Image (cartoon, rainbow, N blue to C red; front, side):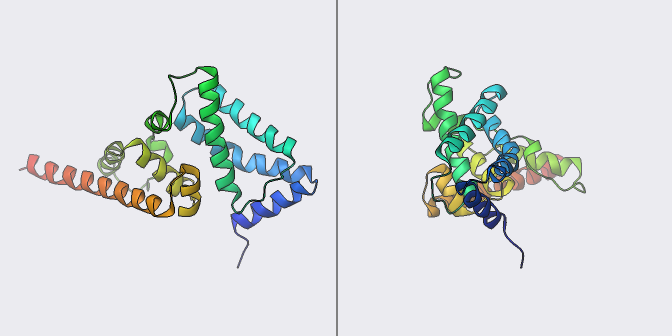
Length: 193
């Protein structure tokens, strides 16, 4: 059985804590694009997202990895989300930010999901329309759980909800999408009669 991504990350984190600068660079490279994509779901200001990533890793560098963590991915995404909200507020790049408005800012596009190439255009469109039926909070949890492959524990930590609330939110999101697709199919059949 091979090493998991989390085990690899924890090993790199511990190496960084023990003074290995290259381990820090590897963590930065491994997480930069994922954090950038996540940040672009929160704000359209890509420069702000880049600044936030750099500031976050600078803070981690200065603290020399003092934190004891169980999941580096959950740790970095949670810290990044917190820092994004603070930076947006500080720089007045958006209207007053609260948890609610941050949730409302979260957007998903078809680029966020790998849709099987064999799906025809009509099926793909149905899935994309179903995604638009989700609330911002549901979009965020779908993104974290399925696109970022985070566990329920990690998702609940990032979104600051308990484990059961994370499971319920995923269940509700899938139910909304399933109902939307079913409605689209039935409506399509009725139009074709």
